[in-house]
Length: 579
Image (tube, rainbow, N blue to C red):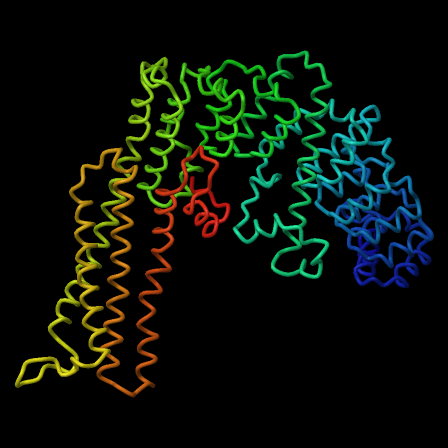
């Protein structure tokens, strides 16, 4: 009879029928200890399904400290599912509930934070006595810090670290490593587009609060606050590091490992905050193994983090970083520039040819920094930096050649079709010729002049494009060619092909206008339809043209000045990395 009784109560709770639940317990005096199939009491179940009216009724005659087989109170159950109203009612009845631990030794605020329920977490944190979170009173504070980091509740984390600095002693290594591996915790890894970045930088919040719900402004505002708290947390940790005595070797190398991880993930803010707090961390001890370079600038170059590399070079220690050899096989910074970038860095660039171009740009930029001795230096494998570059990029060079030839073949076919059409159109004039004099009948009309000019432009532009792309089929494809020569030819070929296609459509529209004269109900739709191929070509190919221009004419990698190309990159691609 146990199971049918539990089903009766369960169904009543699911319906929120308070009278039925109370009536059942009145008719069955011994049913207070009735357990559902997971061991939940009726109070636990009502809290779990969010029936606040049933919870309030049951609490009038039941104890709020009832526990399930896993030592969860009904408050913990409500917390797991994010029911703030029920949690508030439980705490109003018995404030000691916020301090009770379950089988996993979690208090309710930790459970709420782990489940990602923001509102419940805020409430329970405000009600939880801070003494419970202190290091000497158990691991509750450390657990809360851990789940605050996972759920990006950096505001609560900041308050915990500020009020309980002893918790930093126990958790600084984990937190430092976590921040170093989480680019999204900082503005440098937020991936905002151009207009989102503009909103992010503007101080609109007090003056234009009515705009917050629109255009994602509210979300950007929340993101900015989260980034501020993340930096504040990192600042607290770094400041505390200056007071700690790092006795063990593991403790001494932890900051340096964190810096390497931050550089690998491109977290510029992390590096700035650590250096601002303690510049000695730049030359902190490093474990001598094959996975650590021993030089922060070498890390920045290996992972192709130009902003970080630019910052390090600009420091008073910049020359030290440039000339300091690494631990890994006696490579110098030019050897690291010769290595192939990771897939995550190259995948942001369209096409193997442009990837090859970017790799050569990095190598040449680093080459301009080093001395002749470093250029000629060999590593433990007996290789100079130039030999490392050739070996590491052999496969990419072949892939770039195939990509360029495939692109050229496709464009040659398109250009040849346009040449054929426009050459024939030059001798098949709209309206024909005068049989007596041989001149075109519409020679005195402006539309005819537009037809002839656009036909000629289309023909010559298509011919030029085909000739340019034919050159790709006979090129030797040296590595140096991908630095400037091939990208510039690609730009010229794409531009002339676009001009040819646009001029061909203008010629078509002019011919339609000449033949149909005042029949606008046909002319206007025909002109609009003629714009579709041009628009499609621009939509599909113009981003590639822009990217080639950006990568070819942008400012040098280690230059602070932003060129027009860099600004175009920010506008079209936002924070998308194409370096």
